[in-house]
Structure formats: structure tokens, C-alpha cells
Amino acid sequence: MIPWLEGGAPGFPPVSAALDDPNGLLAAGGALSPEWLLEAYRHGIFPWFNAGEPILWWSPNPRLVLIPDAIRISHSLRKTLRRGRFEVRFDTAFAEVIEACAAPREPGLGTWITAEMRRAYCRMHELGVAHSVESWRDGKLVGGLYGMALGRVFFGESMFSRESDASKVALAHLARFLGARGYVMIDCQMTTAHLQSMGAREMPRSDFCAALAIHTPDGGSPGKWPADAARDINWC
Image (cartoon, rainbow, N blue to C red; front, side, top):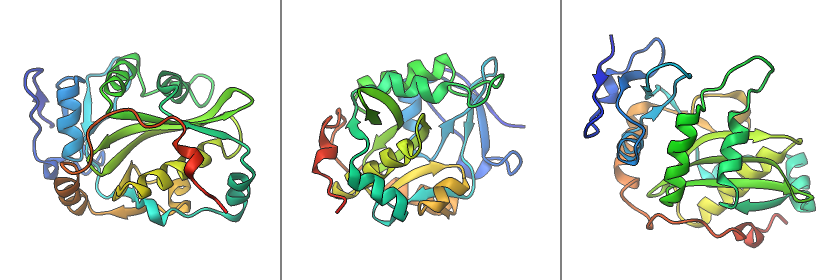
């Protein structure tokens, strides 16, 4: 059994109490307010649930992380980056990015990015904590990702791609942008072969949470990122 959290002041059980099966399920209930989300992410916890379910909180073990300076860029992706096929912007279309990420990947399938989740993260974007990285081509949004930045850690949430390499280009620019600003890691949450192919590696949950305790209080104040920051990134 997992504990039920009331909707008052945020308070989570220790992540060591999370279930092994399903991996990382920690608690249910609570709220998706900024206070709850900030408390959760600082302790290595994130919400993930389907429509019609209570809020479920997770802290899987191990955790997949990507060190910004260690991102692996394939030869073909580097060619795409050098050619400038996509225009990359930051924080200019957050609502559109999360809406695209919420779209079912296959007909008939649902999404865990419910309307409640979209409202919650759009609120975090208004507060300067949640950010989007967007790939544009011919004036159309064709790929991107979004997540939360706390201290010197970026917590990736989801990405989408309507054209080949569009989300990879966004991730490559995010890694370069964060690396130049002293961020120590990108949390990728769950292990996927796609992210591992780009250099992400598994980290024991205890080490991950220890790093959060050091690095999430550090860093600059919340605020929107410069929309044109990608122009300063050189792929030569």
C-alpha cells in the first residue's frame, strides 16, 4: 500500500519508501500547486497519472540522467545542426509545446499529460520555473520539449517531434545552453534507449537525490529564458 496525501501543506514520505513494483510509485493524492510541485522535484519526485486517476507521485530507481557536457551527438544530427535546418527558440510557445506533447502518439491511445497537468505546468511557466525549447521550420512548430529548472538541475518532462530530428535538435540546444550556465544534469526520469543513445546514463536514486540536495538550492532566480539564446550556440 502507498500513503494517501492530503491537499494541505506539501509533505512526502521518504523516497526510499517507494515501491519496487511498479518501480518508484511513492504516494497518491496531494495537489499540483506550485508549492507541491517544487517540494516534489527538489526531492526527486514527480507526478505521473492517467485521466480519472488520483495524482500519483513517483521516484524510480535507478534514475536516468544526462550530463549536459556529455551529450552524444551523432554524425547525422551534427550535420543537421550545422545546416541550421530548424530555428530553435526558448520559451516562446510553452503552451503549444505541452499541448503537442500531450497528443496521443498512436490513434486510440490516451495521454498522461492531462488537462490538469497542462494547467499546472503552464502555471510553473508563468512563474519562470518551467521552460520550453522549440524547433521551428518555415514558421511552424515541428518539435520541442519542456521541463522544470531548479537551481542547477533541469527536470525533463516530455518531448515531441513532427519532423525527423526536430526533438533531438531541441535537446542538443538545451544541453549546450545548460552546460554554458553551469547546470550539472538533466533528469530524464525513466530509462529509454533513445535517450541512452544520446548519452544519458542510469544513476542510483540515492546518488540522484543527494545531488539534488546540493544543486537545487543553487543557481539563479526563476525567469523566462532568452528566446534567441540558441543563436549563440556554435555547432562548427
